[in-house]
Length: 187
Image (cartoon, rainbow, N blue to C red; front, side, top):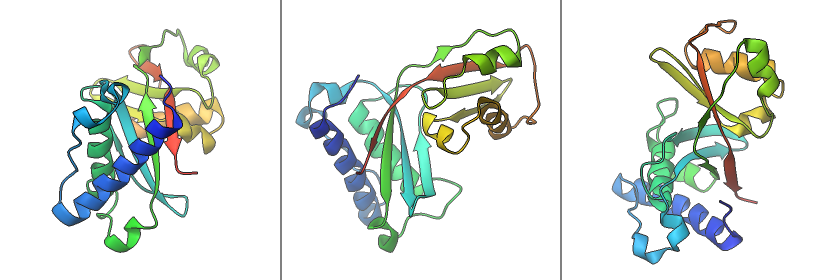
């Protein structure tokens, strides 16, 4: 699914509005689905990433699609601004400085591989987002992480660590799925 410029702008504005609404009311804005194009009410999974001066300021999302796209954007924008446990809530002074990036995920697909080397060979830098799961541990990297971890080996090692596993961990029970993203950002 590829959104046109007007739809992308609308989603970015919705994310901004939800953060502004959160500053005033302590909760996400609730968009009325009837006010939007039907494509924007499709059930989709998203992540909202906030940066200030190109430094991460919050990132929250969902890997499974469970609510309409506009609702997911509004809720995740609010959560990225106010509920990311790595950061204090966004202040009114920071709000004007926020750079907002939206990632709309495709459904994830399990990958088949017989070794770590086989998995690494299958990775598509700058295209794949990955979900790693081992037992009760799970982590994900959006495709945008390839910008800072451009080698497939590094990408995989850091994802293991994010998932709570040692960097050189390997097991035949390790599960990896991949997805792609449509990225919407402020120009």
